[in-house]
Each structure stands twice: as structure tokens, then as C-alpha cells.
Amino acid sequence: MKSSLPSIRVLGSISLLAALGACDARGSGNTGPIESDGGASDTGAPTDATLPPVDVGTPPVDVGTPPVDVGTPPVDVGTPPVDVGTPPVDVGTPPVDVGTPPVDVGTPPVDAGGVARYRRTVTDATLVEACTLPGAQRVLVNADDESTTLVAPFSLRFFGIPVPQSLGLQVYSNGFISQMPIDPTMAIGGTIPSTRAPNGVIAPYWVDLVTGADGVCSVVVGSAPIRRWIIQWKNARFYSGETSMPLAGTASFEVIYNEADASMDFIYETITGQPMNAPTRAAVGLEHPDGSLAFVVCPGGRIDATPRAPDCTSVTTGTRFRVVPTGD
Image 1 (tube, one colour):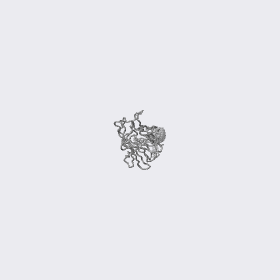
Image 2 (cartoon, one colour):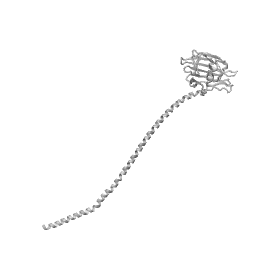
Image 3 (tube, one colour):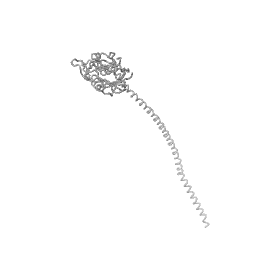
Image 4 (tube, one colour):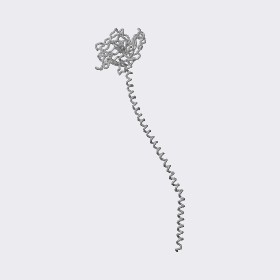
């Protein structure tokens, strides 16, 4: 038994050496794979190190965003000029409205060369049959080149000049009123303006007329201070200039003086049938008391004058308008 122990130890030693040799052999065989793993880990590090530039590159994109936001304010700041520009458009509107009066005021220069102190405008007045009203005064019945005196029912203003009620006005069968009495045969037709008598003329239709049974009627209506004085020529006829048939056509018209503002309404019921050979053409308008200026709708005159008197084509049956003072 004792003689077998060394053999056992020798065998144990050989077994131990063999085991150690096997371990050395595994260690030397694993060196490559272990280094390879370590190398892979080390080699991967530079790849991770390159990531920051990608992240660092992102800020410029973010940093670039502010200019876009900063650029927005100029757009907003630019908006006020658009709003500020709006007032001039609104401010510009008044001149359009203010420009309307010159159109109305511009009427006198067309009719009277810009010096008449009256302007023509529309009227809401309608024809009043003066001859049929209570208190009407009828004059110049069947009259040819005649006149009579009428006293105004209240004080008048004419071209800014007060006309005393006591003055009396001359009313002519030939379709006009004057502050100046003259021989009616000299007033068969006239031109306005003219310094020749008669002057201070209100001429609704100054032409050579012959009145009939209706004559000329005068009446006042309303109460102070808005009374109206109406003078109406009713069914007068034109003098034709022909001996065989001296009268022709019909002229019915009136003038209304308004106490409230010294305006006058001219209203024409019938104007028809004046012969071409009639010696005169109608003067329509107002003439200053000294004859120096006038508000002219039709200038009037004689057809044998040079130049020949023009026809009054702007006043026909149904015409009506108001003449308004523009100031003293």
C-alpha cells in the first residue's frame, strides 16, 4: 500500500501540469478575440465623437429661426402706413361735397356773366290761379301796350336794394314789371341788360303781348313773414306783326315774390304759337335798377336788330324755376 503512494503523487502531479498546460493554451488562444473586442470598443469611440458636429450644426438652424421671427415685425410695422394712409381718402371726401355748391353758384355766370347777384335753381312752387282767389286785383283787361301801377303788399328787396312799399311798381301788359314808368308804346320789347329805359325790370316774359278778358291779376297769399305776392298774365296773345291776323298763340305765366328770402318763382302754364314774323323775342330775367347788369335767362330784343334777337327756347310750356339772391 505504502509503495503505491509515490506513484499516485506522480500521477497527480502529471495531471496538475496537464491541467495548467491546458489553461495556458486557452489563455494564449483567447488573446486575439479579447483584443478584438477591446479594439471594436475603442474603434467605435471616434464614431461617437463625430456626433457632436451634427448636434452642434443644429443650433445654426435654430439660430437662423430668429431672423425669420425678427423679420415679422417689419411686416407689422409696415401695416400702420396702410392704416395711416386711409385718413387722406376720408379727408379727400369733403372737397367732393364742398365742390357741389360751385355747380349751383356757377349758374349765374352762365346766365348773366357772373355779376347778377342771383342764381337759378329748382322750385317746388306750383302755378297759382291768382285771378280766382279772394282779394285778387284784376288790371290791364284787353290791353295793348299799356301799364298800370301796383302797390306791393310788403317791402321788397331787389339786387340787395330795399324797395319801399310806397314806391309802387309799374306792371305792363307786355309781360314785365318795372320800377320806372315810361310810355308803354316804347316797351313793346326790350333787351336785358340795357341802360335804356325801362330799368329795374322783373321780366317773366317781356315780349309784345295783347291781353284778353282775363287781363293781369295780382294777389297776396299767406301771413307775414312768409307771404307771397303773385302777379299772373292769363291767356295773353302774341302780336304777330301781320295786319290780316294780328294776334296768335297763347302766353299764360306768373311771377311769385317770396317775402321770406326775396327769391322769385317763374312759372309758365302755356307758351305756344308765337309767329316767326313777330317783331320781338322774349326777355326773361331780372335787371338792376340802373340797367348796368342783369340776371339773364333770355336776353330778348327785336328781330330787326343787329344781331337779330334769339328765340327764347329755354322757356316753354311747363317751365318753372326759382331765382335766389346770392348776397348784397
